[in-house]
Structure formats: structure tokens, C-alpha cells
Image (cartoon, rainbow, N blue to C red):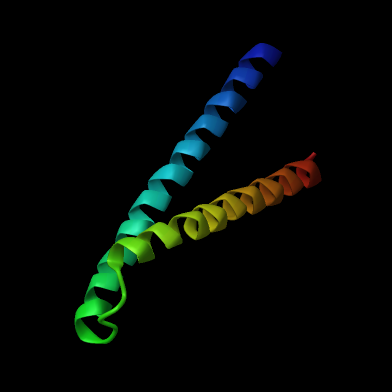
Length: 82
């Protein structure tokens, strides 16, 4: 059973990592679309590609911190429940 739990944990961590990548990708694309709209409307010097590139580490960090916080909350609830 211990081996099965370890494998399940590794799979969960892999899925979480892939989720960070996917959310970061889609978030950066949203930033790029927003920057394109702002470029045409307000800020002509704003490069949508640069805005998207700058947003990638910010989004990835926020998502990773969110997952970490969620893990801590779930671990605390699990510890309190036993």
C-alpha cells in the first residue's frame, strides 16, 4: 500500500506541474490579447509579445504559490481530521 500511495503522490505532483504550465500558457495568451487591445486603443508603444513574455514568470509564480497554499490547507485539514 505504501508503494501505491507514493506512486499516486508522484502522479498528482506531475498533474499539478502540468496544470501550472497549462494555466501559465493560457494566462499569458490572455495578457497578449489584452495588450493587443490596449496597443490599438491607448498605448501604441506596448508590445503584446513583450507583455506576454513578462507575464509568464509572474503567472507561473502566482499559480505555483496558489497550489502550494492549497496543499498546505488540505494537509492541515487532513491533520485536524485524524
